[in-house]
Image (tube, rainbow, N blue to C red; front, side):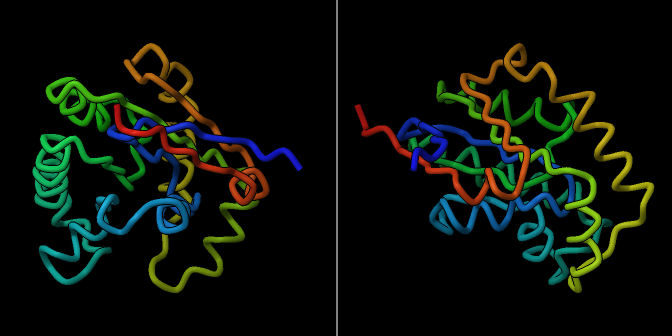
Length: 175
């Protein structure tokens, strides 16, 4: 069986992009070392012991950027686990990639609405109101259509749980 493949440079900034419940954190745990992944939720928890506390979001993203910069400075593969659905939210991360002259890769988890709704019903760790998810889905549609023009060297779009389950990641060796 021929599985879809994602080819990643040895040193890169990878943005996972998708609405809440799309499976970004699960994808990150499956394919990357825990030390390679910087999660906005984890950064919230580091600040206030609650990854769902949206009142510390600004501080959490400040911490996320500091950690990403430290890793990129050392040419370490760095994965950002956040919604990243709006171009403005991605800009400062894109600036970091340019600052450290590393490739920028987008992995978009663009799941069908029914999948998102089903997952939302089974999540006990948090709840999102319909308007939040509708806004995130709209932003995903509006702001990720032209990722190639934003400066991403590669864009991978996964459109179903089956595609996510079958994906293989191949890392290019250091040069």
